[in-house]
Amino acid sequence: MRGVPCGGTRPLNRSTRSARSIAPPGRRRRVVTGAALLLLAAGAVPAFAASSGDANSPERDAQLVYCLAPAHRTDLLTAAVRLGLLKDGAKVTPEQWAKDHDDEFGRACAALMAAESDSPGTAARAEEADGDGWFMTALKQLPLLLLGALLALGGQSYERGSAERRSLRLELRTTENAYRDAVREYLDTYGASYDLADHSAVRSAREALTAALSRVPGPAARLAAAERIADGLPLAEPLPRSGGGYVLDSETRVGIANEEHASVVSCLRSLPELNRAFPYWSWRTRRSGSAQSGTTGGAE
Image 1: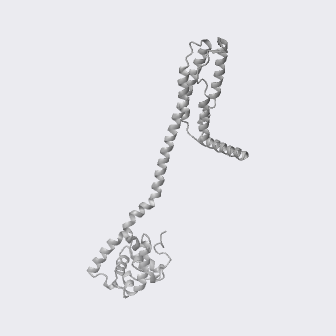
Image 2: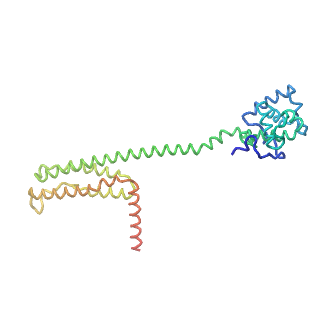
């Protein structure tokens, strides 16, 4: 929080005034000090030196140089009026007032310098800590930098996860279609002629779909659902050629093929459910865990 604005109403306590509270702004210190040396060398300020015991102190020199500078004279008189040290409209020059009223001048000048400093009352401490300014600035900016880095990493992670999910959905859809086509061709051929039915295409397509299902991510409920689908995929082995000691005729094979086709359709019906959002499967996982806990508690 900045201090009392230039010409504010809060007076400073003269007893606590020191070099630390009346030092000019840090960025002007070198200019002010150089100007003070030039004026002292030219003998321009002896007439304005304070009559108190610290008349020759660096602090008073800084006050004289700063507050009697052309750019600050009006502000000095305004500050004196605000502090009740001068009457509004008083006909007095800053130089004469500084000479005749040393204490009042010092008080008004100290207030002006503190009000116009970057941090009133702490300019000197700011100068002492100037060497650590870059470190403190970097430290203050560290949370923002960390937040930016986390957001960037989060965005990259989300994008990478989204790309992986899109790739897996595409793989599941592709392998499912390949498995359906292989099953349909095999069952049609099996019903017409056992000798012409080639089960190798069904086996390869089934293995590819099973591998895709094994890459479905969590939560646990989704993993369990994918595992059930993979384990339940029909036609892991070729259909029989004979049964009960007799070679199966075409009509019997067609009936078996229809049953297997219905099993495949039923098994794959739950496959699109794996693409549901993460919150849904998290809820299913929690519900499953609660149900298992209730069952175990009842058994005990």
